[in-house]
Length: 307
Image 1 (spheres, rainbow, N blue to C red):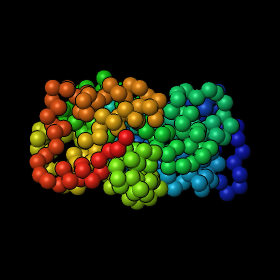
Image 2 (cartoon, helix red, strand yellow):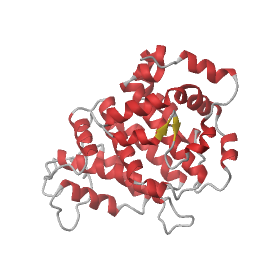
Image 3 (spheres, rainbow, N blue to C red):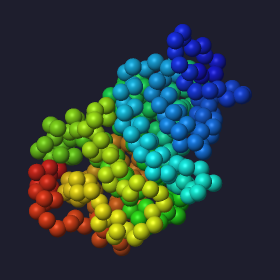
Image 4 (cartoon, one colour):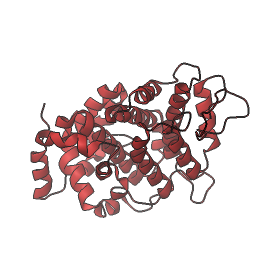
């Protein structure tokens, strides 16, 4: 239950209040995330509570929890959210980006429950818009604004990751941006198959897992010990065809569109000539070249982006 608010009968508490009531929604959110920082299980539980609203009942928002929880559980299972004192330790970068997502969601929930204070970031305003009007497009705008802001704010931590991990950080980013475009810009995402976009990308439906199922793309353990070429050779066939046949040909357009949709112009600095460059040298762009074979070319033609 939010500090200073009485919970309706039968409602489940949204989160345990801090010992001293904070003076703003932003401070309350910071306290919630700090309390679960070293427990992946409690991080997941905190995320789940944000979709229940400040009083434990938010039936219009709850279906959107499906995609968010899938992404969070994948991170926890992989080990990136483990304490830094664990053996092996978690990832400073992944923990920082996850912190940002949790803080923004908690702050928006607190504000919806009546806690005062100005939004600490534009992303919180987008989460508030989702709270007020829970649509697929509003969910993606809020979720991806938090994720991209985490990317932009933590480039120094990303540079400390291994080369294979930095490659996959870019893959995760292009995947979440593409899933958003399926719903909000289906012609960009699927070309002549645009009519399928909203169905395939709706975070309330299971089909979204095809595009956000990162277990099909990334290795399932952290940290990565092998060389990048070894992981590329093990990529799942479906994920490889999606990334290189469908997403890669429209990558520059996708990042440019996303930067405007999220009002985060810094996103444009994370791609160059259609090649991802987040904590990644443009000189090493050969890894983004599509593999040989007819299938990627066919997929590219069928789903060709249209202005």
